Amino acid sequence: MTTLSVLEIQANLGYFGLKLESAKGTPLQPATFVPLYSESVAINLNIDEDNPIVGIRAARYNSFRGQEDYQGSIKILAEPKTLPHFLNMLLKKGTSTGNATTGYTHPFTLGNTVKSYTIEFLKGNIPFRFYGVEASNIKPAFEENKMVLDVTLSALGQFSVAKITSATGTTVVLDDERPDPTKGLTTSDSLRLYDVSEGTYEDVTITSIDADGKSLVVSTIAGTYIEGDLSWLKPLTPSYSISEPFNWGRTEFCFGTASAVALAATQERVEKGSDWNLIHLLEDNAGAKRSGSFRPASLVRTQGDVEISIKKFFQDGQDHSRFLQSSSRALVIRHYSPSHAGTDLTEGELRVTISEYDIKENSVPLNTGEIVYGNLTLIPKYNTADAQMFDIKVVNSLAGATYE
Image (cartoon, rainbow, N blue to C red; front, top):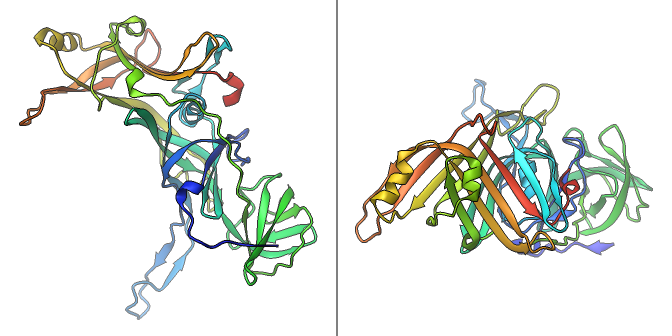
């Protein structure tokens, strides 16, 4: 038996891991780890505070369990190998092309098929696992020269800490204070059994999960556990296989009369603050709270969009007028990573193609002591020739099966 350390633990000692689910909402043990800067993914219990007329002045007479939801955001490093996982949570992945020489190109578009993931954070001693995770918003930003991503997430369920009813031999029964307390676990997980009175724990491996939603078959249990003792996942050992991040110094904004023209065009030098925001809305970020469960039944998609802002210094009136004379144009944004995607020294790339856009706003504000810049807000629209409004492509060194 091992004594549990209860000292203060710095956040940097944690991790963020993920794994593509083969079936939506069926949890798996994360195996890919991504550098994380912050997260706010919360378990919202939505307690129903009851305040009836019962002859008392107390602000609430009782409280009842509500239907839970799980949502929040993360800020992560944006690099070629792991970024497609997050696009997978938001868009439909197409067929990957390429090879080890030229690198592999992974296309993403708006579609009905969005994949889900199991994700896990280590917070202090306790892993927090969320399953059936999808994204509704991905927005890049540049900190110094490196790109980071702000990703808005929703989940179908979670597992963190569960009370033990009994644990003996090779059987663990979890308290069903919360229905289906084993939901979120999978075979091959290691479960940490904690003796509250002794302050000690042991780790056992889950070999099977009973259909009753509360019983587990595990490896042999050495200690003695009684009702009220606790269990949680044993922390994973993270390992990182990542490339250099996309950076501002190798970002290009290319404009043209059509997407193919823009792709071949010479870049326009734009200012920091020029950015994009990728959206695929959910009907409700909390999920569909249908009858029959305290957890969301589904994450229901509605429409997709991409927001574009451009900050640019115009050399002269002619330069400015080029952007205003033709309202319907195309834009290709190319973010490169110095890491090679292929043996022919192809750079890793994140490519955003806006098939057609109009200029919604074109403000040129004046502020004392500051340089005059144009601030353009673009509104993408559906292009019949491309049969799309936008698409995203990632070029990296990993074959398509990594994300399928």
